[in-house]
Image (cartoon, rainbow, N blue to C red; front, side):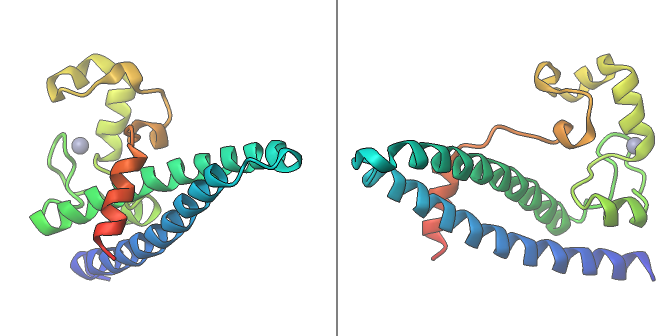
Length: 154
Ligand SMILES: [Zn+2]
């Protein structure tokens, strides 16, 4: 498959995933609001507190994934999707299929893991970064921002 076709297919995948995540998040945020409004009944308080914790963590994870998807879609619009942010080489389609939110090629990824000092030039806050790839792309997500975004899109 030509690279362009592969990227178009990834674009569709990301858009579908974004729609699904937005729906899931809207549901969880609604659940969280319900927990807060009717947790007055003493018998259910312990159960609700646990469920709220889980719903909150799930929402955090989904919000994080959503922000990575938004970033990938923005890069597609700019025409920079699939290019390594560090050395500008094309990231292989196989890597993008496995990790649609990749922003660096495998070489740069390894280099940054081996020599974290290199990242200083990119202005990244590496204090918060741990050694796994998934965590490297994490950003702090403010749920209330997402919520506003969701209601604006209704
Ligand atoms: Zn690179």
